[in-house]
Image (cartoon, rainbow, N blue to C red):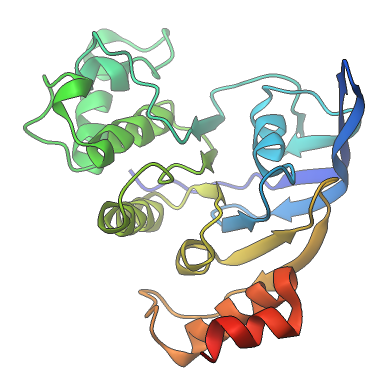
Length: 261
């Protein structure tokens, strides 16, 4: 199932403004970012800085106030099968089984025989063999998110967008799901963009970590993570990246408090 992709995702001078009853709010201000094919990019920032808004713009669920976003030579203006998205909540259809929920992401043009084979491939990809006929309420939170990931991948997108997909999970399940996503990324080599509040998660998964400012969201720093995988969260190198990102948010005084007590 490994694919070779050649589409660069380009975010070019993007600004997003929302018009509210209370006035105009600038969520993103002049964001520019290139994401290479097969790259895993993590985005961190304070709540309300526009991280999720950026993903929604890339998905085509929102339109840019200024600037543009391109995938390859195509300007993004609406949702498309070349982009898949996983949300914090699983958003599964409660009356449909695992296979039926995954199949919901397959374009209608697929032949029925091919359709069934693709669904089974993705059941196996996310490790849900034996649960094909289970309903969402019969699954754990982590298993529900595996179904969501499979549903987002089943349309064979070039880019997978992950919007705080593990935020509602307990700590151990969250780590397990991070490892699952990393395994899937290493197998599929699809471009992945993760929004998270968890700095360790961003470092563990990302080739780069994009650090965003408070609203209006801008890119404060781009940190290249050069650690080999699998990454040791307790290593001095990992801690050094963590310290660098904390310093972006809290400065020298808070960095000392966090790491030297």
